[in-house]
Image 1: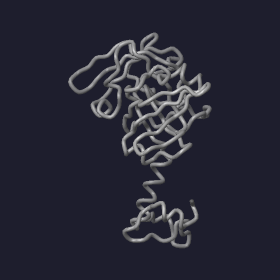
Image 2: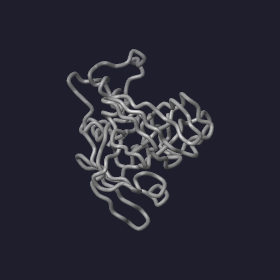
Image 3: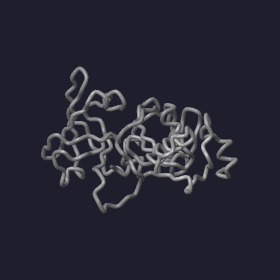
Length: 233
């Protein structure tokens, strides 16, 4: 588990590419402190397992599924990457819960300076957009960010100067690919609601406990009109 607070910009120092898999060697400084084989490190938001440690670098195997679903297959030697070690028990929690399991990739559509902020517009697949809400959280290349605006197939985020300077987003340009992970909370809420409105209520929820939404309706679903009717909007 990660928080989306990038510890440092690392660098790809080696890449061994086979037909369907890859081995990445990543240089870092802060993340190397106390790092052991078998530990988890988020590289551009992708949870990778440390397979071997060198004095100032580590390498990790990247399986075919990860290459298919993320932008790691696009990395080149010398390219900067966001690095974050797994959250330690009792550690400070400054972002939001990030699993390191990417939901899909998007592309930077446009960038715009606004006073001290950098506004970035990013395209996203439907599987990611379904979980986004204004002022909600999303991890972009492993960076915990707040959604500023939403469209049908895009969203925007705003970066403070510190984030722009110390993460990959400050160096990427329109057309570049980014890894996207939607907030875990939204996924669980959607799963629960879909099951509930299909009449698949958990056995742990008794009739006496009831639901804020009222009884499930056959063939129904979680809709804007239903939420409004029940007083949530």
